Image: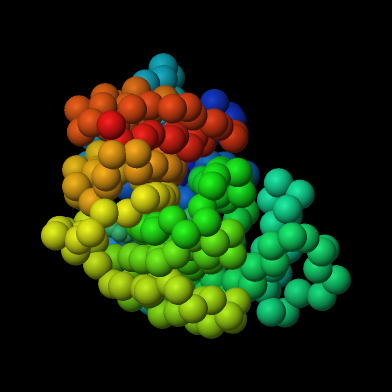
Length: 281
Ligand SMILES: C[S@@+](CC[C@H](N)C(=O)[O-])C[C@H]1O[C@@H](n2cnc3c(N)ncnc32)[C@H](O)[C@@H]1O
């Protein structure tokens, strides 16, 4: 998948302005952000990028006396994460029980669950709040012999922890071929056998048997759009954990979920990112 890198110059360049801008960009499909000295850089999949939607968001930014300029650049479809991985991806420990690291790391802390990830172009090293929020839920959930769907699996980090905690069988799906290839590689690296990885989107769920547990870390708009496909393959008592959105998006997701027969259990948050849990009635 090719990505646009959009460099935003914000004036004044304050934390509030950059936070509000990232929240608004998240709503139109931007997946990740890096702070700069004079603004932020945002990353969005090429097929989702739409210049007029972006202009509209900037014109309607809910802040007074702020000016924002930007420059969009289509990035090469290559392993542009490699440098970052080699230089910045450090082992991370989640909930004192799970360590995530790569094959090139040395001196990795010991933990009950040891996950090897070579992320390449795929999202999911455990460093992003949306990933770690669901990893923490998986560490607490009862997963033994539960069938599980990981929608938007990225590196399959979530599916791998679920497998280590006894979930089976597991289906991991992603819309991006890089993620599917990378998932297969990571699943092999961790000697896991009961995860099947598929290329596809929510429409590929039609007509499937139900899952006991569904996890989906994607983004607000895709979750709103695809939630009916997820609930169609859940039975009474199935649990769903969703993340990839901000605390301020919970109400709209909750409204949609309740209209589809899901009961809200709770949410948790980290740096303004949220995970929500629902159970199907
Ligand atoms: C935020 S990443 C999450 C990756 C991983 N599950 C994690 O928690 O770190 C979202 C993933 O969803 C995938 N994705 C985006 N749109 C999708 C869709 N409509 N259906 C399935 N996967 C999608 C992206 O390719 C990306 O790998």
